Length: 95
Image (tube, rainbow, N blue to C red; front, side):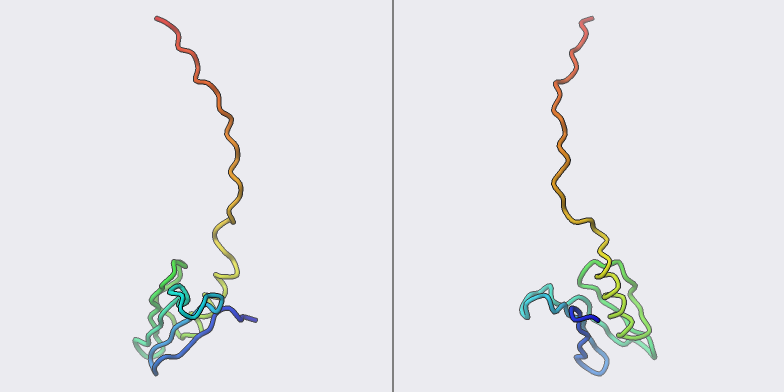
């Protein structure tokens, strides 16, 4: 069950998906704006880089994709860097 992302209808033809983990006044709270552009065709304007499509068949499909992508992050969490040994440069041969 998803409690993090919420689909909110703003007007009869506009929706947003918000991230409930963010504070109400956080500008990063809104993930995507969705607008009906035709019969069963919706345009998604992404406010986060999620590499998802721009057109969908319903606002619910947009929400499903956001939930799916958020559940499988594409980045590896930060780790301590691997130490690189410091070695003096090789000596030059005189010519």
